[in-house]
Image 1 (tube, rainbow, N blue to C red):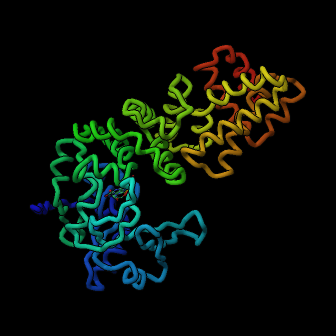
Image 2: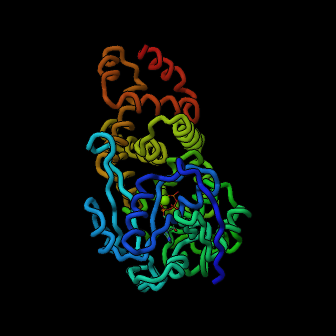
Length: 386
Ligand code: ATP
Ligand code: MG
């Protein structure tokens, strides 16, 4: 392995103070600690890092002992979270810095090739090769202000390319989530995927079906709650990955508008919620099921309820969601026919419903995409709020 040390002086203001403190404490105790992964990549690209991860040669128990407010987490591999509280000691001001001990690439795999244990400690060189992509395997030494590159990550950043570390087919087999990570980074950074990655995904997309629904929930939020969710959606579809996340979902104008809308909101620093996106993604399936049931049993509200339940049950086989989330999705759906009726006597109660805002946004988006016949209804509710 050829090692490149490139001197890069990042503006101190861009570095997370708490992460720097953690590194300093670990270094003072005689260990080595570096910033690693996405934060180094993003800083090199003048992007604001989402989080600052740390890699160290100290064992988790040793790190834990150095920080009063820290905890050991993780089963498949152990990590330390160092907690920080800013402002008032309220929940909202709480955050943690994740510290991972260098691990070797040695993994224990199940029969299907999925990694079940990945907790053998190693050197920094071992830690490099267990990571997913070259661009994610850069380390930053805050003392010498150098980026340490064992694998060609710096070159890839310059060339704007995503290359996987090791054999792509094998690495995707070990952890199929890497396939959707590849798509996410490609899109977020505007990079090219290597041909090897492309063909390995085309070949092995179905492996994503082996991943637990709980893990995919977190990943789905990362995929779509950002400024480029629609591009991610299109690429997931192109590579045959989308059906392993949302098999009931097929692209339409409504989905496109909702994803673009979400990105706009994020750009403007407005809040977003997975309720809206999941409700949009599953609406068509819900509607088709509703029509089929309605033809059989004739009671609209029962059919609406049952269709919602069935579609959600199908969905959580692939991507799980917390209970509150499925409950709110249903609320948004069940409010649609009520809004569509525009009954004067119900206007006040509907306006006062805590879910009105989202249900109205949902209706508005339908009216400008797949349901132009609802433009009048949307106008009615726009006016009613004034
Ligand atoms: P972002 O935070 O912008 O989503 P990131 O690269 O920091 O991107 P994280 O999920 O925070 O992604 O992971 C931190 C680092 O851990 C990655 O940069 C990568 O080196 C490593 N990593 C994460 N997930 C995997 C994985 N499934 N396989 C191998 N390495 C991984
Ligand atoms: Mg990160």
